[in-house]
Image 1 (cartoon, rainbow over the protein chains, first blue to last red):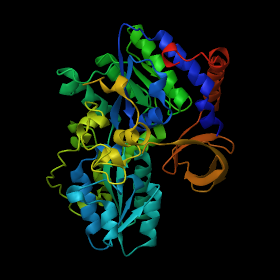
Image 2 (image 1 turned 180 degrees about the horizontal axis):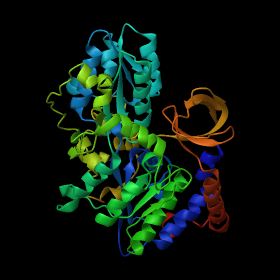
Image 3 (image 1 turned 90 degrees about the vertical axis):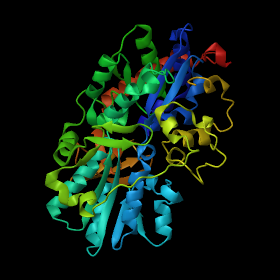
Image 4 (image 1 turned 135 degrees about the vertical axis):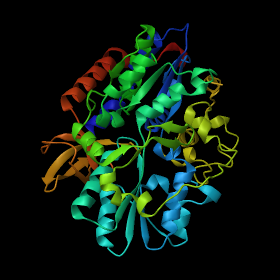
Amino acid sequence: MRYIQGFRDGDAARALSRLIAEEADTGRDYHLMEFCGGHTHAVFRHGIPDLLPGNIKLIHGPGCPVCVLPVARLDLAIELADRENIILASYGDMLRVPASRRDSLLNARSRGRDVRVVQSAVEALELAQQHPDHQVVLFAIGFETTTPPTALAIQQAAALDLPNFSVYCNHVLTPSAIQAILDSPEVRELGQVRVDGFLGPSHVSTIIGSAPYEFFAEEYQRPVVIAGFEPLDVLASIRMLVRQLNEGRAEVENQFTRGVTRGGNEKAKNMVAEVFELRPEFAWRGLGTVPYSGLRIKQQYQRFDAEKRFGLVAKDVRENKACQCPAVIRGVKKPTDCEIFGTVCTPRNPIGSCMVSDEGACAAYYRYRRYADDVSTADEHR
Amino acid sequence: MCLAVPARVEALHEFDQATVEVGGVRSKVSLAFVDGVEVGDYVIVHVGHAITRLDVEEAEKSLALFRELAEKIGADPNALYPGLS
């Protein structure tokens, strides 16, 4: 616990809060996007907005794999679960996410379908070994942190020559999503969203390293600080961003030196490269179709590709019109700007994915700031 | 989804498996992505896999820095910036 509790010390947080306030230029605003939903929750859980001066605004990014998965992809997972003889293995986050016609994997389970919660890809593999008369499909979602375990499971399935295991691959890439935000009309032309710098996700970066962000820092002139998830990490990273912006620098800095290197985890990266390749494009909820932003299973391992094995074809869907998830994901709207936030849409009865996931911005607002008098931050990016 | 926790390696098993401990909770994780881990090392664990080694030296450096800040500035109850008082 030393390396968890140690980074939550109140006195050090107070000191950082003061230093940030001293260094922040009162003559300007700082619009910082925390890309990762894990950061959004850490920020609210530890009350970080209240430790920052009013001119430092945090904008919540799309780094929540559950939130950005389009409904059409979830519908296909449910379609799979509804077929005979299939066990669908999913990470717990996905079960309550609303799909078309208010269906969900949890509903599928309540109508007798075999949907299992797994905590790791290996558990899905074990299910396949235990149930040789069933087809076991792993509903794989996640950013670069979660991809290597899926790659490993596929390699192991190949080594065991498991005929009844396959993967429904929905893995997505962080750098493409950041670029999609920077290229979005809201940021480039309309000026609805201003992003001066990024808090980069540290766990993703343990795998991909800090090097992939150098392109954004350079090309878009936005500083990036790879930030840990504990409150002192977040505060220290905000201070680093403020300094860079004050000094007119746009560099990639690494606050999470205890886990992230420039090159990342070569072994994990190689395993991912062995099993997966880029999709020419992948649809994201909120960001739309983003080129080269998702992964699919390579030809060599295609017998483990559930989309091919079961001939899955996406259908058009109509999303709930009241739900503002897409705008929330892009950072254009805050959860509290949504008319159904906290009334029709709650964690117990979610309408949009951002209210379901433990990384979704709406869930964070509902849990930690539902009653907050949020005037200072409410006006920020309208 | 990308939630990961630092955990201490307690025992090594065959097939790249290990038992790790965090806050009294023990679980079995895979070490397939990190080489040369020994008992007593720290790793960062995500969905049942160690995704990287925790660099204890760097972690201690950060902690020392935070401690220094805490002692120099943070212990003062007026340390919060004025707007918060």
